[in-house]
Image 1: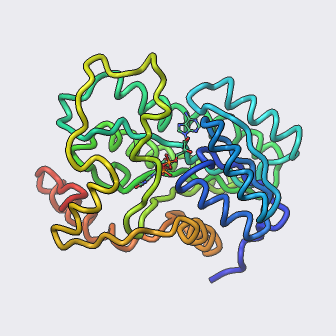
Image 2: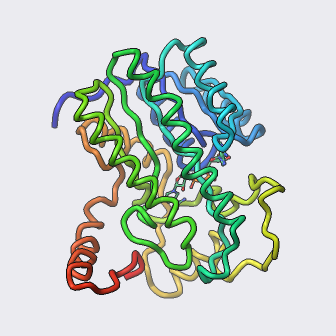
Amino acid sequence: MGDLMEFEGKTAVVTGGAGGIGRGLAHALLTRGAHVVIADVEETAVASAIGELSQLGSVRGMVTDVADEDSVVALADSVYEVEGACDLLFANAGVTSGGGGLPWEQEVNDWRWCFSVNVIGLAATVLTFLPRMLAAGTPGEVITTSSGDGGVAPVPYASVYAASKAAVSCFTESVAHQLRTAQAPVNAHVFYPGGGLLDTGLWTAARNRPAALERVRPRPPAPGTTFAEFKAQLEAAGLPADVVDLNWLGMRVLEDLDEGRYILGPDADRFGGLLHARADAIAEGKLPPTLLH
Ligand SMILES: NC(=O)c1ccc[n+]([C@@H]2O[C@H](COP(=O)([O-])OP(=O)(O)OC[C@H]3O[C@@H](n4cnc5c(N)ncnc54)[C@H](O)[C@@H]3O)[C@@H](O)[C@H]2O)c1
């Protein structure tokens, strides 16, 4: 293991940092002495996160909608004016159009909303911040939050979300290669949240869905689409259902950065077997196994 990464005095921007995994990241960053800017679309969640996390260190919030490029530019302008730098960028905000279901029962508005946040919003975040980070000429890290679902293999009943996260993983890999080729002082990393069940607001992501992108044909949620139902289903099937401490997960990401890893999060070693099986199937021209195998 190399030297530990220095977080003390560094500025970290965390999109989607007011809740769930992003808040765990903010918690970990504050614990290691970074100054954190939480950028999140949910105003009340930003206020409550700042209220609690400011006991740990220096943190400020800015209501930001990553799906709105102007809002992301306003965030970057504010960060470079107030903090003067962004050393660590966590492009973490994400949603799932949820409800499960057959791929051909999803609506174009499900694709529009999910992609507007997970793909266009994440791209806008990186495209807005990374050139400024490079212009600063100082060491930096860009971390995108993907998912094993799509980033590694799809969960077929979450087709839209999986496709969006495949895009995140592919985009991040391209960025990381190009930064390396350019011998830039900034690195890119992809984060796969995991380690067990994640009891986050992703299960109720529709709370932030814009009215203009509502489903045209509303349908009742499929069984197993609340966190409690999902956990109960796993327990009934005798499968592991341990809930992850999100502050621990945030610390784990920083430890993986310490080690200079490209892939962040506790599940990388679990992906190997599945990816070998996928590679074998692809080489034989067969349908590769999903994340559920
Ligand atoms: N929960 C899981 O099981 C899981 C697994 C793998 C990956 N992820 C990914 O982790 C990331 C965080 O999700 P989470 O599980 O913590 O869910 P969450 O809903 O608890 O957190 C997401 C945060 O993003 C914010 N957000 C939503 N739309 C936004 C927008 N347009 N602009 C700015 N902020 C916005 C929400 O207000 C929320 O605070 C997402 O990218 C998600 O896809 C989650």
